Image (tube, rainbow over the protein chains, first blue to last red):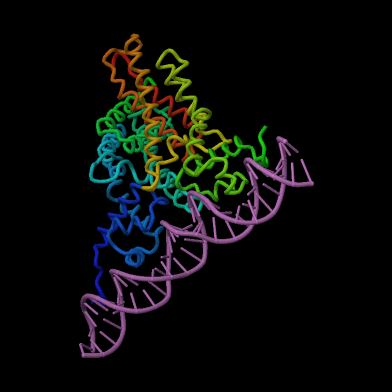
Length: 199
Length: 199
DNA sequence: AGACATCTCTAGCGATCGTTATACAATGGG
DNA sequence: CCCATTGTATAACGATCGCTAGAGATGTCT
């Protein structure tokens, strides 16, 4: 069996707390002292359990994407009709970005907006992940042009970029204090730009 | 006349450089060393000319809003028709946010997205300024409902929030590497959501 | 020239940064 | 019980943070 002194805290619980801190303050402006204070554990315990700050962030990011941020992937995967997928994406974002039990907005979008030259690689990684999400959306739209849901001449890249920008805008608005209905109205307005045979 | 040793650098030029650094890295993640390195001046010279880091940021912000960021105010003031104002706002943002001679996106939107608890007041100030801009846009739209340009039942707050989110999304996309035409396509798509008598 | 005022430079302030060595506490295996 | 093993707590590491005292440089004044 496992020997040695047992850990005095729940690792998953601590990781969840780290998600909350990084989510709220971002990577660079989150200090180790801020983390240990929020998690109620000591510095050495944090380093023993997660490695260093960078590793902890990436593990928190990974868990975030598989939990809080998974609704985007689900919407694209579970809705066969592209327009339904985008509508669900935006409406779920409206509620997810304004939940009162965790920080507002999207960690993937906001956590490394401001970063020092030393942690430029973290910003690059998040940008890459956002680009992957945008590409998934673009693929979904491009597929809809082949099924006939959308006109063949539809610019899938432009539409995907637009809705990607709307998501980022909704995240920013949520951080600025917008209500859930505010975000739902943004989603509703954005859906008016959905391409039609006329456009 | 003014006595004493003359300043060895141009103050406006240094302020312009400070704008660029804060624009790119944000407030918290911009260190004094980063500033003095970029401006080519010593620390004491910076403090003598601008006070402390906070005062320098606010002066840089003020200058930014009267130069790079002034196109928003101009669009709302110079275009009598609300729809023309919003269209001009978005199209000018598309080019302003992707200019190659300065950092991408909007300083007002991005400079304090990630901030430590110590500088929460700076984030609050920027948020307040964004709210003022959103209110100006909302007022413009509300006025258009009274002139008959827009239906009387138009929700000015919802429309203003939407285009505010689009601007923030365009800034984020610009930072993520979107091209000028990408942003122009976002603007074009967003304009399709402009309210009509039918909506 | 000399007095004075202002800027610049070097050096360093205390505080905090991320991180870790060291000593002690708490468990399981013999 | 004793040892091995692992986690926790204290304290401190070097580096950097924002910031400034003190000394020297460079100008205008009389």
